[in-house]
Length: 383
Ligand code: ADP
Ligand code: MG
Image (tube, rainbow, N blue to C red; front, side, top):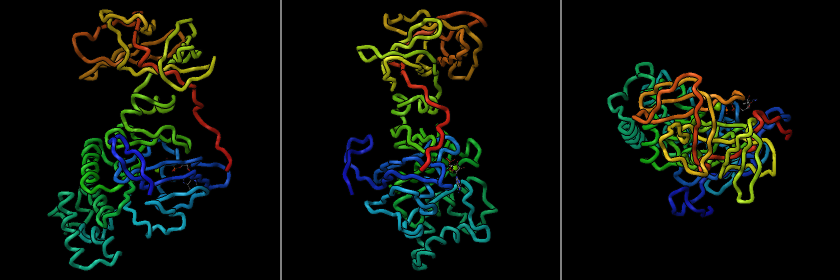
């Protein structure tokens, strides 16, 4: 087991799970996982986040042992699991449609993984009682799954995955079938169980809000490649590329021609000659197509604020505004049709604008990123 600096805690933690150059093809033509590398620390909650079809489930299936890796290796607790059968990996799992056994009671469902592991009756009885208590369903042990609500069933599925105290727990979109309120409750519940039990968690979702709420670290996944692996706040504040910037949270991506300056900042020249400056990003060419990225809440509409001399200014036309309660979302348009969104707290400074009104937006170049444009689809590499 290797020792590496801890994930954001400033302490030393151990790498528990490693993917090394893992590739996967189902048809020997297209790589659905192209070159997957990831380290997960002991006790960490890591989420694979990516659009549908990006290869998340495939990665979990390889980790669980239900799919072979086409090449590369997976290590759990320092040992390669490539030749270890699924049941020997001792992994707890919850899937989206993980059905409980309908003919068994809740208690029997929970006892099942323990019976398979040939535990004694006394031990099983104790663990089932503890487990029911953990999910606050003490009085539901004798019910059948059909007599439970969706949320209660999901809690039982969760408890069943955890009852044999696996060191590693995998969850593949376990909440996607639940309505919003229940989903948020269960997010809290899963986080609570994770901190209480201290297992290592690999969680899969396509829902960025869910990933941001629950995870220690998130691997943003697209086209079978990790785009960025970082904590939620790092992903939001320091996106590595245009895909991550667009996928995590709301974002404005303004197209132009980039050019790296001698001080390392990037000048982005728009079609009408406006020059915007960016202090961050991955754009590194002397000249070329570029996207300037800025979060909607970093843009200022107000003309009463003192505008810093090095601030970006952008002339836009007002299109519409939406009242969202605690904040207001404004829509603006550029002459070339680019939409700009601005989010402002709903307070006295939020202006009322009329349609067609021309106005300057301004913001700091410290909140601006210059990114290489990314192709919306990468043609599948051949293995
Ligand atoms: P995600 O979970 O991110 O939605 P998947 O891992 O399910 O992505 O799928 C990634 C790609 O692999 C998709 O193009 C999908 O069609 C393909 N795929 C997934 N499972 C199989 C399979 N058993 N056989 C063939 N192709 C598959
Ligand atoms: Mg999936």
